[in-house]
Image (cartoon, rainbow, N blue to C red; front, side):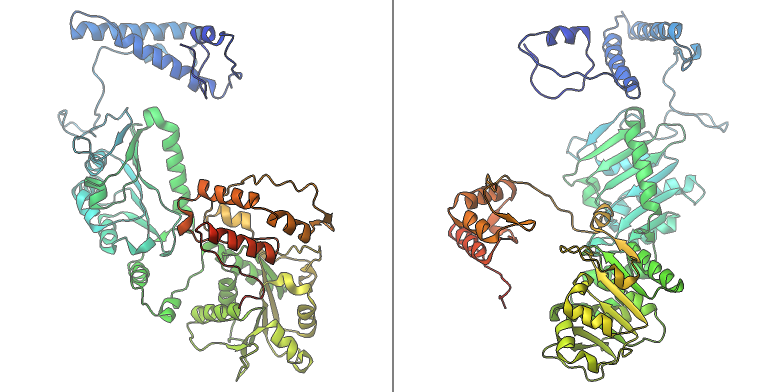
Length: 581
């Protein structure tokens, strides 16, 4: 039977070479890498050694064992004849049994002195909580009884889960004199973790760190690492949080890993856990803060201002705030912050303002009323002041005018020259990439605030004009889109490039862009391209009828065309343009 077509990662043996000589087959082979060859070659030898040892004959079990030991030592002798730098004659196997326990005291040992995991320390296996299978909760208990150090990484910690393994945890703590080397990383996400369980872990002596973000979490892993000084460390990685159902009878899949055959994975586990432990996302467990955070998540009707009192910057926002403070201490009072959309530019501006002494006069400028309303709400939350700030828009006029959130058009229409240049101590301009527009330029040239703060996600303009001259050609702090994605600060997304089979080679291309009219005619001439879009949705979206989506079109006519097309095909759609209320 010829070799099946597909991917391989296999050493080419003489037998395999004979199969590859088949003239009907094509194959790709690459040279062995000296860094990875030892792993590949040792796996090959191990597979053959297992088969040879399994086939060893003997009239009695003892005779069979003796033959297996003899074959093993013969192999080692052959290897030692060639290379003695990494092995010695002392690596030969004695006729004794497998070593299972070593203790430093003089107490007589029995085989049951230290309970062993159900899965041998040398082996890896899958635990599925099946009726006739191992249950992950029971296996965690048995692993704890022989571990020297333990690291736990779970999204949720429930009281019921803690109770399930409490005795094993207590035994672990007792073996370490009440100061167990036990570290736990968890979250307040969805308010699911019970503070009573964390209190109990702390009472046992565990170190607990928490992500206090109740709205989102980067931690979806569920994993346990059981360190053993003997070198036989193990880990459990899978789907189970620390809850009764997950540990006992939930439909959960967890892989138990041994460092004997998965050492690289467990070393990566250890390194990644250490990284999480040290980064600012996870903070030491504080009971009152935790209860407050979880209660705010569980109470959907919570008062917005009460929640605002607890506003804390994320680590990436703290970095920007510290950079702004450092710039001002260095004498730079006109600063630009570049931060990706969704990373909290307005929060940064509000918390930066909060740091300033005496609550100085403020002018916050944006181009839409909705942005101004949300920005004012953010400042109110940061300052714990529900009355902070007034709006200046087409329909809103400030009564006091000391802290104003103003639309650029309203400032321009209300005779900017009548406004004293030093009327505001602090001026914040949102979406600062608009600064080269005439209305913004007039404002910036007129005002002379003590502090100017520009906010933008995209300082690079399509027309090539720079806005950095307003800031002495400097960017005070930046967290770009690629940085935000690397740090997991933005909503993860899947990107699919779908070939719509449209030929643009005959479309007019002027001044660095396609002609809109030509594109419009091409995209609305027939339904071929629209059908391709529909097929792309069917291929990549589970149920297009339930999705919420934005479609970007080349023109209003194209948008109206696609709206009608989607509606005819059972996907309710609406056209949104610049004139939409």
